[in-house]
Amino acid sequence: MTTLNYTKNRVALLLGGSITEKPYAYMIGIGSSIVSVTDTTLVIPTDRQSFTTITYPSSQKVKFQTDWNSVEISGTQLSEFGLVGSATGTTGSMWSRSVIPSLTFDGTNELRIEETLEVY
Image 1 (spheres, helix red, strand yellow):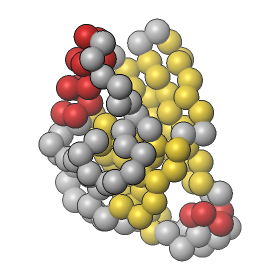
Image 2 (cartoon, rainbow, N blue to C red):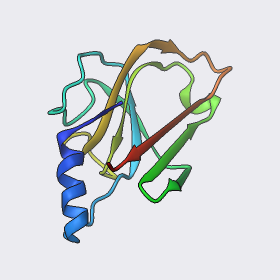
Image 3 (cartoon, one colour):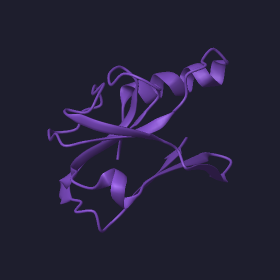
């Protein structure tokens, strides 16, 4: 996982109490490119899902989890995913982005993404 510039800016604003936008959902996609801290969206976003749970493993960590069931994810060739701060739209509010070797979902498996952000 790569923490993007957007995240660094938002954390600074959170500390100063002047932000209302926080991580909202995970977005998945089928695109592929090298991850850069200046990324603002996925290359080819295909779906977004609100968090299933948000937990706090320690005072400096927050863990986000999102699940897709076998019907929702069926037919997807997942190769990228990221944490987004917007309920709609696909650009401008990426908190993190990851690119992986393509995974094909054939309707027999589910997807869970978990990511822990740590401030240090």
